Length: 372
Ligand SMILES: NC(=O)CC[C@H](N)C(=O)O
Image (cartoon, rainbow, N blue to C red):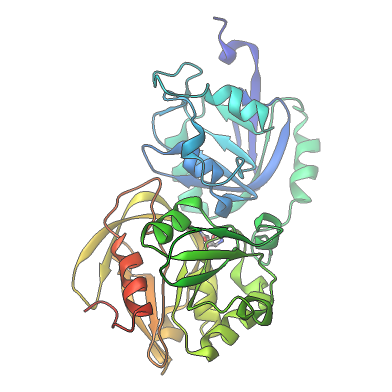
């Protein structure tokens, strides 16, 4: 087989002017987005199809990408959501017998532009130092001035509302036949594995489009609410903050994951901020302050909840902290049965330490108390 590395050059240009050379993978073309890195050693297909990554270029820091191909059951949504990808060693060959095909075919089919052969250690060190920024990858245009102009037109992630772009257009049911509680899930870019976890625990879930009003949701008579993960800046979503506030007013249990966590914070009078370079990986240590237990967690977020605001709040308390940087990883309301985590208890990809949170949600719905 001919080497792509020799035949297809590609370049990666960062917003700060740094230029990286490599070779083209996926579709030949040009793409822009916010560049961010995921340190997970496995799970590239789950990462690419996680709607929370919509609009972003993902740098995979693990040494090999593509070597186990792709398979439909690993998808967290119907299509890859990323804008582009960057890696070091890319393999068009795959060794998993059950794979549906190669990652190269998959990226090409879905129009994802990528670059391989990049020194990802140096690139990540650079991003960690400089912070989050936009980037452009091209395997068709090599005029740097033209690429700089295109990059300058790419909006910054701060202030972007993206959830409504990836949300379902129509409501749908998950867990039909289940006789457990009825959970209304606000879909801001929900990962399939979250719904699977709720379904496995006997819940009947109705997934609603991002901009559904509480009145429409209530017409289904849910027992509890779930606020999903999703892309973009939570502060640019006043419509969802209003919905969450109205949900809290009903007094029914509410659970939020990642973007859902940030929205519970905003609905409780707590601000959010853009992080220096975010948390994206499968081994972030988190401590549950109520139980005293530590968990290894899967993470993917570029925004965070303001610690000072939570500390001042009379209605919210911190339940989880990140042991690497002390950032807020979980909160709960003191005045109503609502809680949330910044990380991904459904993992996929990642460790399973935090799946107990789904059991906590079910317990809360049954009238029990959290974390006891
Ligand atoms: N995984 C998520 O839900 C991400 C939430 C939000 N878009 C962030 O980057 O912080």
